[in-house]
Structure formats: C-alpha cells, structure tokens
Amino acid sequence: MIKEPKILAAMIIAFIVFVLFTLLLILPTNIPIGLTYVFAVIGQLSAAIFFPILISFLYNQVKEKEEGEVVWRVFKEFFEGGIIRVYKDREDNDQPENGHKDLKKDFLNHKEGTIKLIGVSLRVFFHQSGPHYSSIEEICNKHLRYKKVDIHALICDLSSPELANRANVENPNCNLEESIGYNEVKGTISSIEKLKGMYGTNSILFQQFISAPYCTAIIFPDKCYISQNILSPNPPVKLPLIKFSKDSHGYKMISEYFDYVWNDTKKNGSTKMKPMKIFSNDVTRAYTHMFSKVKHINKLRIYAPSTAIIQPHFLANNDIEIDDCVIMIRKVPINDKLYSDVHSREIDSLIDRWKMMVDDGRIKKLAIIGYDKISDLYYIVCDDNILMTDLFALNTKSTSGQQTNNGPIIYYNDTLEGREYIMRCIKQFDNYEKHYKESATIYKNY
Image (cartoon, rainbow, N blue to C red; front, side, top):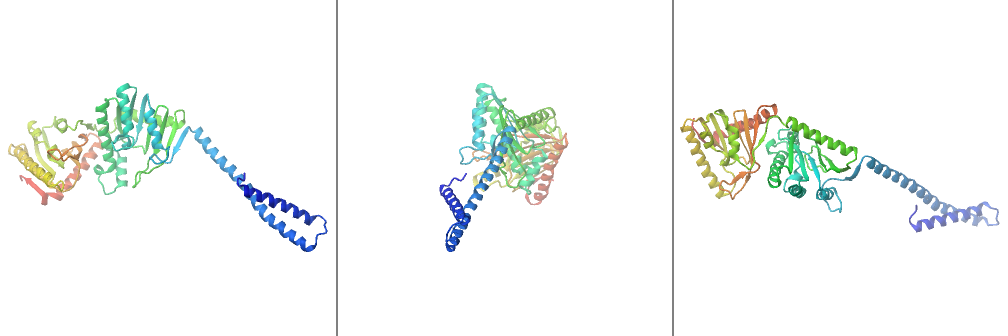
C-alpha cells in the first residue's frame, strides 16, 4: 500500500491527465495542430509521473510480501524448533528486555527442581563480581529454606587440554597456571565451596570434566539457555544467546548432553588422578595428606611467594628424611617498606628453622634461593610423585602479609594427566633454579 497521501493524489491526477489527453489525441477533433502538440507533451509528462509511481507501488507490494514471507518463515522455523527467544548476546544493556535481564528473572522465579549449569568456568555465575552471582545466592538460600531447589554445575578440569588451548590463544606468553581461564576455574571452585559452607553441602553439587564444551548452558526444568563460545584472543566473544522451551528438540539434546557428561564424570572421574581439594584454607591438613605415608624424599621442590605455607616442623615431626631440598622464596614481594621488613625477618626465621633440620641430619643438601618474580602461585613437589598447589592473595592486615586464597589441591602421578601436570611444574621450577641460583642464593650447605 502507498501510505503517503500526496503521492497517491499525484498518481491519480497524473493517471486522469494521461487518459484525458490520450483520448483527445486519438479521437477525431477539430483541435489545432499546435494545441495537439501541447496535449502530447502534457500526456507524456503525466505518463512520466504515473508509470514510475505505478512501478514503485507494484515493487513495494511485492517486496513487502516477500519480506513478510521471510519473517513468517523465520518465526515458523523458530516455533517448530522450540526457540522461545534469540538474544544478540548474554550481556546486559539499556534495553528493557535482554538475555541478561530475562535470565535473572528466570532465576528469581525458580521455585522447584534442579538448575543445571555447564561451561568452562561459569565465572559469571559463581564469582562474586559476576553479574549472576546474586541469582546463585538466591537459589542457595531457597535450598536452605525449602530444600526444593538446588544447582548442579559442570566446569572444566584444571588439567584439561582445552583449558591449556584457551590459555595459549588468549595469551601465548603466559603459563597455564597464570592464565585467566585457569584461575577463573580455581576461583569458581573456591566460591562453590564457600557457598556450600554457607547454605549446605547439597545446595550446589559440581563436577569437573576433561573435554571442555565450548558453550555455556543454563537448564531449568521448563526451559534452557545456550550460548556458543569460541577460542578468541579478545574475550568475551558475545555470540547470540538462544532460549528453548522444554518440549523442544533443542532442550532435549542439551539436557541429555548435560546428563551424559555429569554421569560419565561421576562414574569415571574427571581426571583419574585424584585431585583432592583441601577446604578451609588449611595448609596443615594438606601437608598431613601429602606426607602422611612418606618417610624418604629424594628431592623436595618448594616454590612460594610467602613463608606462610612452608612448614619444616611437620617434616621433622614425622621423621621424614630428604636427600635434596630446594626452596625458592620471593625475596622482595612488593614496594611496601613495612611489609618488606616483616617479610625479610620471616625469611631469616625460615633459614634458621631449615638449618636445624640440616644440623639434625634430616636434610643432606639444602638450598634457599630468593627470586624477584611476582607470582601468586605456590607449589610443593615431592620427587615426581605428588604435588600440592594453590593461589595466594595479598592481605596486608595479616602478620605474614599473605593468606591462601582458595585452598590447596593435591595432584598425583598415577595417570598421564597427573604426571604431565607435575612434570610441567618441575620443569618450570628447575628453570627458575638454574636462572637464580648463581645470583640469588640466600643459603646453601654445600
């Protein structure tokens, strides 16, 4: 339809003029020849106006019909596919409705059943700075009150090759343990354990898998959301978020996929190398678990930004003998005089405690090396059999200046994945030792 009245009036007038002057030219009349030429020119002008408008009108009619058919076909395919909504991404924006806002509403309105989440780290849900952390807290609070709702979460295992691939793409010069994705997963684990402590151990159940799905899915009992992820040096990738109804094929496939990964991980274990999470930031418990059955160590490697996690008294009390022990401790932690003075005194105390073990004959060779690399990661490697690792968070109010952030994790070498992780840390440690031992050795007895 032509919606502009002036165009419609012009087309009608041009049509009437065209017909009138055409009849005057065709029908026998006594019109002078000069006037006939005038009528012919007017008729041509009216035709020049009428026909373009007519063609434009017909074109618009066809175009509107085709566009309508395309739109109808798209909505028909969405409907048949069970797609309730497609959002341009899952980010928040100034629109009254978007994927972020609708997802928060669905969390808020959830009254009964399990919400299933799967993703690489699920940072946006489980990190306190994440946009959906408050929604997770609300679900956990409902679990505490009604026991009718809970959360099942699947995240990537720290030893997954997919996590290493992501780290290499996002920052090729970064070690895996220092990569964003690796620490996001560790942060998620820490946050989940904190929430479980606050709202009950069954409020959130989580497992880790080796093969990371490059998607994020949120599955409610009556609907689900899914957003595709891709490897990119510039995350987030902001790909569309799709919402499926419960009766759709898409919902069925996504839900069955989650259940398969969940049950397979539960049955076979994510890594088979028994990573053990030690809760409550209890390094002593980690030491107990790590060395409870050890009586002799060929080489002990300790890499730490603080003396807080280095506990020689435990080794002495358990009659453990060590052939070769190398400790790498951060020598100048930060440009803070007060903290630096405290840290220096702690290093002196550390040397005295470990020298006592040398004097008692429990350690044959001991080297303590200072390093200036700023790192929040620590690890302790016992031969090539077992490893304890964790992140540290700066806490200037504590006497030691730092405190553990997530809680130690123990790794074993009884599988290929475990051996690879341990050997990667040993290689890094030996490279650091070679680099710093000539210029930064604080103490050695040989």
